[in-house]
Length: 167
Image (cartoon, rainbow, N blue to C red; front, top):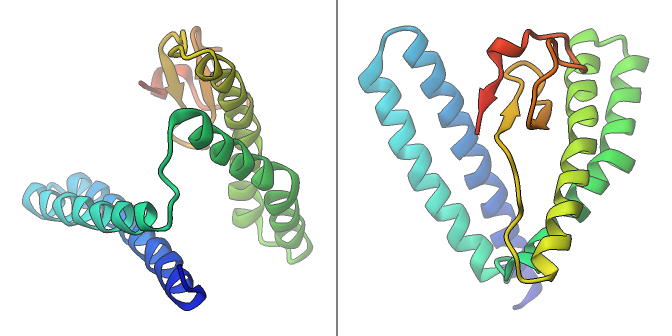
């Protein structure tokens, strides 16, 4: 693929991905406000944006078999843990942006767990097997991710275990 086209598809993938998430967030707000049809509209268009992002991602050659997908996921999580979030958190701290310090800390701590989970999943995938996983829980405040039994409170943000979302 020629560089300009590749760059354009990467930008389009980023834009469509952000629109997908933005519309899902807007749908949550509409639901809380009791505007269920508006929430449904946001969710529907969010799905369309996901379709666009998937098409761009595919054309970029980024959809592969699971071991390669896990390699890409591990590399992304590792970048966030080792480079991105330490720098973002440090900058937010330097600028005394308490909310940004909190949100980057939450993400940084959670990405460490994600990297570990993906590495474990890769071991199974390399053997041609699916992962053996219990119920996975996500903290709705910080995104902390845990498999199996929950602690009483989130180890990152202290949210009660009853609020975790099961997967």
